[in-house]
Image 1 (cartoon, rainbow, N blue to C red):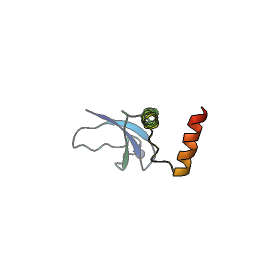
Image 2 (cartoon, helix red, strand yellow):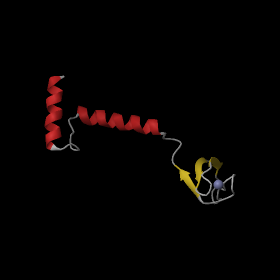
Image 3 (spheres, rainbow, N blue to C red):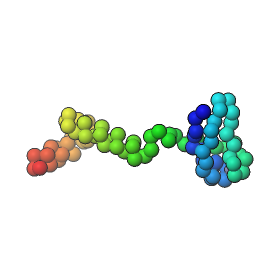
Image 4 (tube, rainbow, N blue to C red):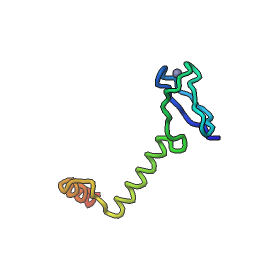
Length: 83
Ligand SMILES: [Zn+2]
């Protein structure tokens, strides 16, 4: 049975709930079923940032600067030479 993080839209109460297939979780505070499911406990913000940084390092190592404008690209390459 998976545990999910929920955020109640009625009373803003955050809680975790075990959710059986086909069952609807209910806010333990106010009984509302108007809930926001928070994704995902498996990928906390810090981890996502780490993944993003790793991707950036790979892109930089391979010389991908597609997301920079031509002038920024020139600046970056200039900066690289000065290091
Ligand atoms: Zn609530």
